[in-house]
Amino acid sequence: MRSISYSTFVMLTVVFWCIVTQNARSEPGQDQDATTQTASAQPAPDRTLSLPSDTRHTLWIPSDYQHQGKTIDVLVDFHSSPSLVRASTRLAKLNCVVISVKYAGLSSVYRVPFSKNRQLFAAILDEALNALRAETDFPKDAQWGQLAITSFSAGFGAVREILKTQDDFERINGIFMVDSLYCGYVGDSTDAIEKGVVSPPLMKDFLRFAKLAADGEKVMIITHSMVPTPGYASTCETADYLMDQLDLEPEPVAIVVEPAIKSEIQAVKIRLYRKAIRKGFSLYGSSGGGGADHVAHMRNMDYWLPALPIAKREAHTKVP
Image (cartoon, rainbow, N blue to C red; front, top):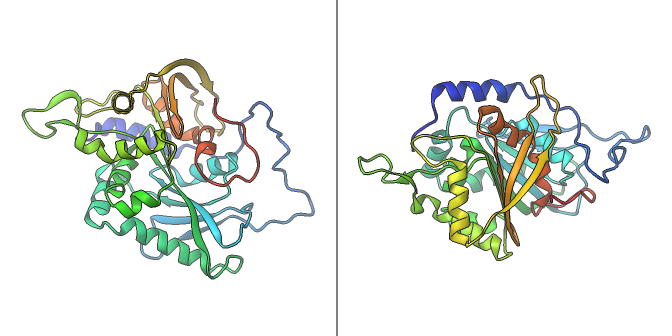
């Protein structure tokens, strides 16, 4: 599949690394003092562990993690800023640990390792679990509970390959594609490319997961922008494809998602214009068509994260 232009990549990278994760979103009915630690409580600091086999794979244990016996829910993120996904997880009050997989580059840097080694995803999970068991405050027989994946932008290259392994497909309870579901066109890389026609083989496993979510057996969240991607299907085009295959009609909405995370650059709001929901499947479309609009989806992950099937530290306002 063709890559976005180098200039676009540079622009997104600059925006990407300017993010500073400092304070939380105000939502209707949310108690801003609910997460304030009392003076007497001295929680352990957050822990970030680099996994030995690849230091680009990190395990984050939040200081406010609430132990639930030997079962531990886990969120595995591909390509988001590790610090931002951690802050977003905290804002969303998810009671889980976070594994971040962050490579430099576009979708091929994710696709290639996970296609060459079909056991890589399981190996990352096993290594992270062993690291948890080595921590003094976690059980030696700790096991993974609910498993959810988030993917921003190029991270879809890993997710598509992971879903091809049936054991991995079955163990994943939820997926959140954060303006991340791109795809080649029919006839991609040939003279017979059919522009505008999403390639069904490349969407096969995403569609399988979406159908299970629409039946209430899994959870799948899709967000898309209107950023054009000449040469391959944009996140808007793949969203249209999924809705067509699921026979879903989008509902027009006018929802403005205010940024929760402060940044050194001007905050960009997400303006949602459509949504489509059926049981565990939900899709949200935004009207923004620039690089900053794309990054805004990652910066506002906390808005959708509570819908994932991960334990919560306390009640959270439901996404409308």
